[in-house]
Image 1 (cartoon, rainbow, N blue to C red):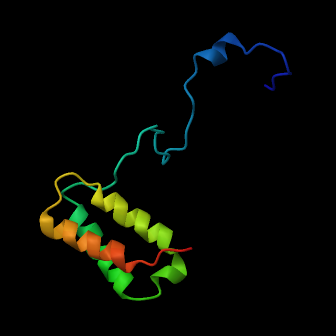
Image 2 (tube, helix red, strand yellow; image 1 turned 90 degrees about the vertical axis):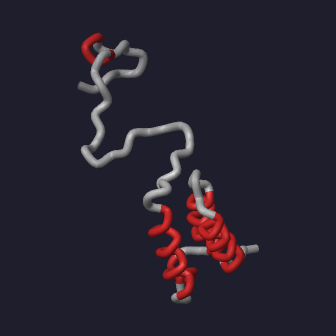
Length: 97
């Protein structure tokens, strides 16, 4: 049923939950880091592999890679060696002017 401008919504519609696709993530207003102490090592290794291979900036620009590295850097519980690797990666990605 289509509502006309100025028409009040049907009372049955007011209490209905919003339908989302099955694979949709719930919206959160705060930043949620996708990395945990359990998976950040794999993420760092992946970033090292992709960025050493060259051509990574042909797929995505430096800002994308720096954001990915920053996300991993924000993971609580990083080991000093992991933080050092992320800092080295961050320095290796060119900054676009």
